[in-house]
Structures are given as structure tokens and as C-alpha cells.
Image (cartoon, rainbow, N blue to C red):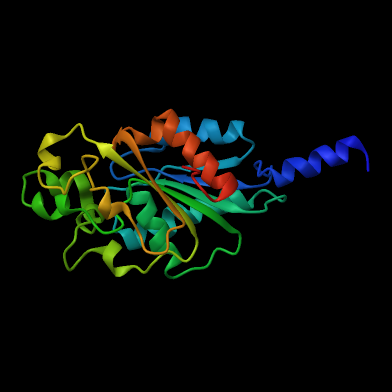
Length: 233
């Protein structure tokens, strides 16, 4: 066996990104794909194909957004004839869209999923601030479904049946919202409420909900989980 072949085999065993793996990136509520652009660049540098999806998070329900956003991501990834696996990296609402989609549809090529600050058990902030003027307008139909009440979509969905890594944050830049959340929290969701039964690994970073997806530590942990199935901490 030549040295080149041995080298390539060793690369495979070390968990390096397979060139034909694709990552679908899904931003959070009231954000755009720009918020995931730094993560997207880092993934591309590691050899992943990427599909950074921009979807109208404020104008539709979770049930409507899931096939809309994820369908587009799957289409982009599947346009590559060399496709092996499709991974997901999501922020906030994006993680609930993945859970919603997988509750009704199968993704044969599904690889690993990393959720950043997902309200997997709902967010008490939605219930507490629902009557505040402008809350409905800012968060839209999907935002109303992310609480802990009877209309909570996250609480209606089942446990993870796929390789899932959850990254929670424990710093807040919003004292008003944090006041109604269980501590520690990231300003939008408590650390405890990001957890999901069946998740493979869990880690907490010292950042806020709004900016965690841009931070070096979060990006490093995300890439490590996609490559190895563990955060390694």
C-alpha cells in the first residue's frame, strides 16, 4: 500500500469532514441567514458543502416553516451527486423546525445535528411576555408556539432519535426577558429548557443567545460534534 493511500485512510479514521457531506444551516426567529454566515464560512473551510437557508420566520407557523426551510436545504444538498450525509446546524427556532420535520418525514442521508440555544422544552418568556404590546408582531405565529402552554410545539414533539448535540448559553444581554426565565439563561431560554431527551451530548458556553452562533468557542464545538459525535468536554 502506497504512502498516499495510507495517509488517506488515516484521515478517514481521524474523523475529518468528508468532502461530500453537506450542512444545512437554519437561523433563529426574527433573524436571517447572515447571522449564520460566520459558522457557514468555518464549515466550508473544513470541507463541508453548505446550505445556509433564509426563511421568513416571522410570518408562518412552525408546521409551515419546517417543510419550507428544510425542503430548500435538502434540495441544495441533494444537488451534489457525490452527497454522502446531510447534517444540520441550527439556532433557536431552527432546531424546532428540524424536530418538527423529522416528526413527519424521514431524511435517509441524515447525519448529525447541532442545536444552538434551542427552546426544546419551550421558553417561559413566550408565556410571560405574550401580552406585551408588539410581542405578537415581532415574533409572529411561530414565536407564539414556542412557550410552555397548551400550544407549545416543542412540548408536543418527541425525544431525539438522531445524533444530537445541544449547545446552551448562560449569559444574557436582556435583563427584562431574563427576569422571567429560570437561571441560568441566555436571555431567551433557560439552560435547562434547551435539553432534550435522547440527545447525544450537551455543553454550555459563556455567551448570549443573540450572538452565540458567531463565537469561536461555539463554532469549534459545532465542528467537533459534526466530526466525532461528541463535544469532547
